[in-house]
Image (tube, rainbow, N blue to C red):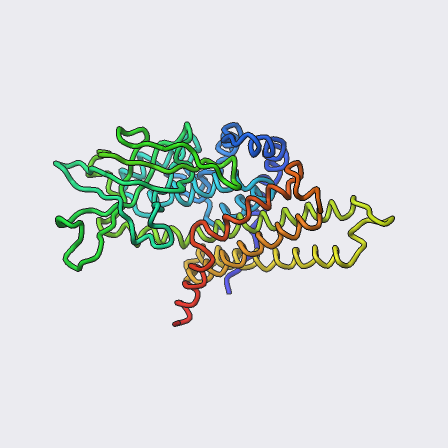
Length: 388
């Protein structure tokens, strides 16, 4: 069992981010949610703190931390605003991490410094309209034409892909080896290619109208004869699908941290409300029906946090962590959804009003059971590790 106790440096970072979330994020969270605007001023503050470079070496402009430390920051941000938390999560684990894990030294030197500084954002172009959980169903294609990749296709639900500071989208594409885009084994050869933004033919279509995460940037993408140099291939040709699956294994831990932050926020808001709200002459928290419900919410959050701490610690120490990451993602996302529902119930009619944070948490929670692998996918992965 890995040691999940926080170091002094990690605890100091956690407190610093928590203070930033309270003093900088919280005052504008409701405004950006209502107006559905990207919080550039908050992102600039996060960049100044070095949060986008947390898990990357100093030699590439990072902070020299680890993925566990990044998860701690994501949790604290999510206790206030999930849109901000997912902006950081996607910027690090989806935008920059593929380059760090699989890029050439030249690609790392070119892209990582600005991504780590938070001056620019990168995005992860995997999901397509007909290829979500079945990412192997990718239809976007890339063919070589005299030393240039020519890319055609579309992507869906891509975070951080259409902001004013987006400078890169890494896309998965079927790289043709024969006339029907299949290799000799009869299966698709999927590779990953770096697409700078802007590039002619690349379009971030109008943003989605979403149930939650209103301050997070999410677009469908269209690629029509997008041409980039052959050197923009990321990693080994034909290994794109496998490489992105490994990125998702890590990302599930970060999403679990985000879910824990939301779950804890629901506990925090419910405790405050249960103390302040009076009915029948006493605080509603004096009733066991309410106090027990909140106690269960706290227990649920604690278990979920323990799960993601374990997965993150395993990853940091080089131990196998794929099963633990799936478990953490499953239990944390379900804890977030359940706690958001219970917090709304505790708040009664006020819980249905957007002026109360729990309404936003309720709307933001459901995507956590879907994004970066649905709950059903997590169960499939866990069962597979059990030999089933």
